[in-house]
Image (cartoon, rainbow over all chains, first blue to last red; front, side, top):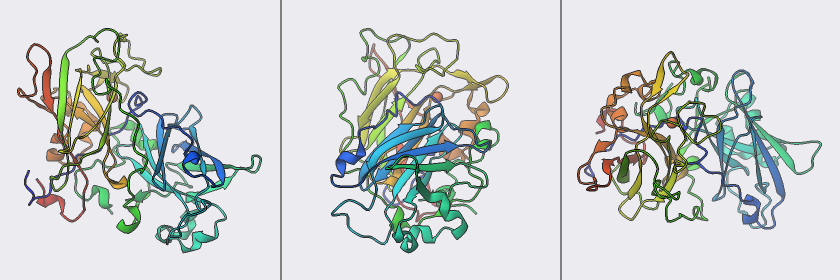
Length: 171
Length: 232
Ligand SMILES: [Fe+2]
């Protein structure tokens, strides 16, 4: 291995169904890292091409240097306790709307999938550079929605396939 | 069109019908390429889990030793320019010597080992090096196709210096006769890239009267400047 020639990267392989003793949950409330932000519970729900829950996925989220990860349950969901991005008092404004980055793993995924969670109704969405690369009719798949029955609860659906297939990014 | 992550032929496609679960889970629309300036997110600033004393020795996590062939797995984590990646968190998980995972949903009728959990973690040193002690996992059957067996493997997860270098993969053992029948390994189009996942028996790493040594180096993505054809 010399410095002149680029190396072939190690290929990705699926996490398979039995990762739980290796990729342990990182379940501490992310909200504790963001004092003063608007606390929310974010439910992520993963479904496959038959609209069936994906009960053996692993969801990793990244929000301004803070990491969380949870396996999905039987109903294909997992939950994070964090703050709504953009509500932290000293948060600096970038060319991007407030969002949470997602990395998704599952049996049947030979590589991880990357997506982003934006928040419906945010006026900054129109200015976001990443959303700008997404065809308009698909942007809605990147929005979390407020749960009308439970204040402070947001839901983000990940559709791996189908009419409402979520936008995934090549990062 | 191919996106950045399959540009090099080193990565498996998302849809690979011989691996049946991909057919209802692989997204059908092309990935949308994010400009690099937007995707190059840095790793968490608050550090990782504390690493426990026996976290990189899967044979010492219970009162007694697990069944099976004791092995050392060690290597170096580098980027595509062969520069050491230090401080990378590595997590592993594996089946026991009989090919059974300690997992509620593993229905393989092989015995569990009360002295083996099968999970480990460590962090690379300044030179990118890591080392685990464990036992050699058994091959196990799965339901993908008739008489399907996975070659013995250890699952690896790595966090490099940025979000883009996140990698989950599997390490195999040399000369496994199951390789040609395994759609998960065969999903990788390029033979040299497949070879990256096969560890090498290493007499230097082998500890006398104790453990066989296997070396396994890992190359994390660094940049996209070099086309696949020019790589080694
Ligand atoms: Fe496995």
